[in-house]
Amino acid sequence: MLKINNIGVSFGGVRALNEVSFQTPEIGVTALIGPNGAGKTTLFNVITGFVPPTDGQVSFDGKDITGCEPECVFPLGISRTFQNLNIIPELTLRQNMYLGFIGKENPSALKSMLGINRGYWKKAERLIDEYMEFVNVTEYASMTPDSIPYGVLKNFELGRALLSRPKMLLLDEPAAGLNLNEKDNLAGMVQKIAGEGISILMVEHDMQFISSLAEYVVCLNFGEVIGKGTYKEVRENKEVLRAYLGDEDI
Ligand SMILES: Nc1ncnc2c1ncn2[C@@H]1O[C@H](COP(=O)(O)OP(=O)(O)OP(=O)(O)O)[C@@H](O)[C@H]1O
Image 1 (cartoon, rainbow, N blue to C red):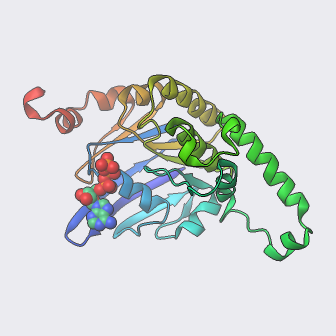
Image 2 (tube, rainbow, N blue to C red; image 1 turned 135 degrees about the horizontal axis):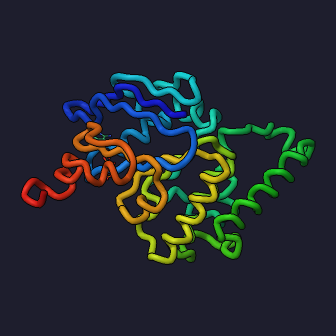
Image 3 (cartoon, rainbow, N blue to C red; image 1 turned 60 degrees about the vertical axis):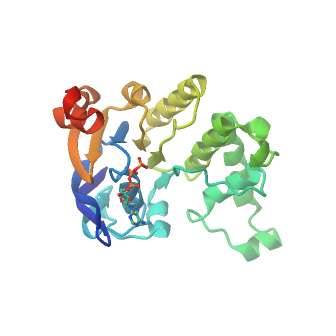
């Protein structure tokens, strides 16, 4: 589905990614792991068009999307969440949910003002209700983010990313900052989403969370792939262990 071929990214003198290649399975969950600064978020930014690669190609569903900007990548069916919450503080949760439509479908503003495309907005309202329900945030719909628990806001971001009904979902540290109960709930949701045929690529540090979900794992260190395969294969990979634990602990 997603093919990363020889990707390199340089930020001035910093080589953030170097000759990164892997392919995600057609369906299921792929985890992208690696120590801090390994290049995980940079790779997400390359895939979603926020950072153009210096070298290499990205293809999705057989289409070359290298260097495509976010507004071209998103309508192809790639949706994402960010490491930090991307929520407008002045808007209610429900109002923030509308942002999940921007860029996928662009209803005419004039028709909306004249009330000609009511059907579109009815469908949008229905989808918003459905996905807020799915991620268990309905009871917070009319509240602004400052009075909503962090775990709820993380769930909300997942729901908003689903609103565009993507083929692939990129989750940047979805379990970060969640308690055990919240992580369990999130794992259940991720499993359901994957079960519906949406391919998931997630950056995550929580190994227990990864082991319970990911069919395929790719490990980066200093911008390079140092291991890929099943969770078990990667966990037993000496280079991966060295990157996480240091030489003396192996
Ligand atoms: N816009 C930028 N300008 C310059 N250097 C950058 C930029 N973005 C990232 N880097 C550098 O590229 C490298 C990879 O960073 P990146 O954020 O992708 O790592 P990461 O694996 O996501 O780390 P973390 O787990 O801490 O989020 C780091 O050395 C970082 O300092």
